[in-house]
Image 1: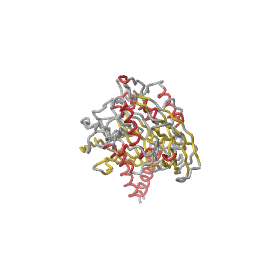
Image 2: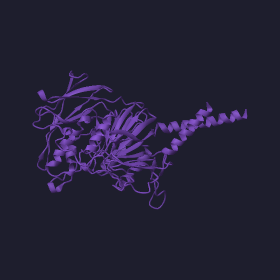
Image 3: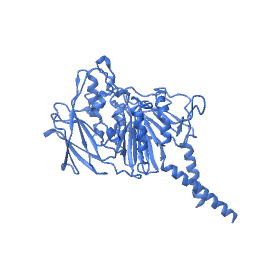
Image 4: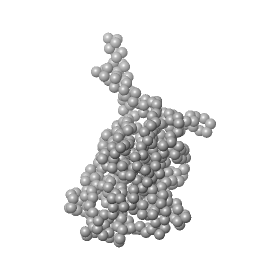
Length: 478
């Protein structure tokens, strides 16, 4: 029995060495580009307008409160406002409840949007499947969603992580593969439609096509939104100079529930996870609204209730690709010490159109002329993961810097998505799934140890190791 325990401790120690940055990183030689990086034609079936006059389209839901007992349902009617009411209940076709929403529209250059409906449904029960219906007369449409388990440190939950998606055939491959994997909600790390790569009225048209494209998932499970640079849409040559105009009109977030003053940064709690969404393209230095809000939000995190602390941002603060190299440095300088202090488990980013995972490292001890002037292993630091490989028309970022930095564990320029499957307060299973040859291939995977409860576990494990050592000494002496 003692030898078996010692063997387990040795294996565990080796795994800890790997996770803390001692092992050598891997640069995969595989580069996947099955289809050209061009947008799917507008007459393709994935952009099909639903049947019926003024039928709801571009349906999507997100979490509507701080703790997962509400959803915000959004949709568009093209011809006239129609009803903003949602009927919902516990069985299909039998709706015992209803909620009244609002609608709005906006213009972008000469494009005029459809009527964008937004309805908050609150007071929901945890871990319950709800069926809902929207629309009028013969053009009603029916969907469903599942609420998360209640806030609990051991509540299991499976997140998908997608970034820089766009609307190409590679984007479609990513969507199909994600939907096969059993994810319950998506953490989206920015750059949605890439409509800003178009001009004039086509910008709005491509927002509409993207909304119909992702509806196959977004109508049935919440996508937690984070804005990227392609959402800014600063286009003064068209008379459009209001940043994030289309995005903010179309994709609401529950920012007020976390006491944020802006929809671009906010936080939610879901099952056993506390998720913080940051805005890479809003002011974030000291004393700005985002900085002040984040300082308070970290204090609200209760790791005894939600042990998994996850941060989403668009620009990675550790990146060894030539694409967007060093763009996250300013945010790293401002926030990295907080990420370490509060023991964030993992930080997901996009922006770079490739995949990369780091070891637990930090670079918080350098002060201009003293200290470590490079990242060093740090058990309290997050794992940094870049998942900007959804499939957009800009293509892959295939030029990694050489040599591979010591902090970089695995990197590959291919299309795909990630999943984070939380098992309990101690462990989560992470996979990056390459969309290879029409199959979902788990190319990079590891067990993520929780920073809060895992620290206590490691302490108990060290105590166990000492007890075993004493026991062995006792047996030898006797």
